[in-house]
Amino acid sequence: MEPLYQAGSILMTVNTLQGKKMVESGLQSGDFSLSQSWPSCLPPPADLEKLQQKVAGVQRELEDFKQEALKAIHYLEDAFCEMNGALAQQEEQAARVKQRLREEEDRGIVRNKVLTFLLPREKQLREHCKRLEDLLLAGAAARWASPRRPIEPPGLRQ
Image (cartoon, rainbow, N blue to C red):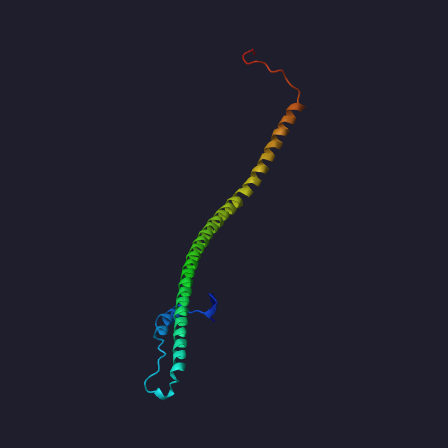
């Protein structure tokens, strides 16, 4: 199903390539004259004049319709070009966003690997620091518990 477009007061279905060819070539050959082999079917001259005026009016309307149709086709072609341009920009932006997401994902993977490496090491270091603190506190407690000797300056001993 082809889309419907409003052109002036005319609602029509548009196939731009086919419609453009039809408007440019097919409608130009609007010859409404009767061949000479039908003279007996011709109406009286007064009616013939009215018919010729009606035909001329229909030809003018046909030419006006042709102009409106061509304007609508050009408008649609311009809109299509704009939409293609916008689509290309959106595709470029989407590609940039995907690239940034890949980069962030790569950084996240590296962060996880670093954390996986560092977290157990941090735990080991905390345990080692705790043992050192305990040793230090135990040594300090032992020194406080033993009687103190006065400290003599070096070189005074004999």
